[in-house]
Amino acid sequence: MEAGAGQSGRSGVSFLAQRLGILAWPFCLQSWPLTALLIVNVLLQLAIQYRLNYWSRDFFNAFGRRDAHTLRAEALIFLPLAGSSVLVAVLTVWTRMTIQRRWRAWMTRHLIDHWLANDLFRQLRFAAGEDQNPEYRIAEDVRVATDGPVTLAVGLLAAVLNAVIFIGIL
Image (cartoon, rainbow, N blue to C red; front, side, top):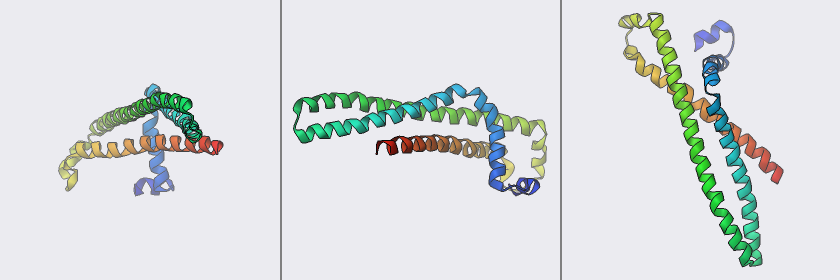
């Protein structure tokens, strides 16, 4: 990390972010349908939460008025709302994990091909320490490099959209 940061005069974090972006861009071009599905899932979950917020208001207003007919109608509305919320949440987790898994497989293949193409594996017999099994190190490093950014991006998108929508409600 420091060698790359020192060569370019940039901070280590920006250097790593740039390198991750370079490695991520080709994969993003391949996986845009999954990314679009993930964004749609986040938007659907937000819409369901928005509707549940208004359902809660209507339900408790009817409860306060002791309006049995409206309470029954609101109870029937809740079932599809809750079911769709669970369904979209499961679909969101599946899509996020599929993107992470495919990106991890793609990047692992890319790194191993690069490692084998440049005969870097021949230098291992001179190396001492825990790098004797580089395939495990590559797999773990790739997992850390791919899982975090996807989770962060989804969480950030959901948080920003939630803030915008619910500030508007208040």
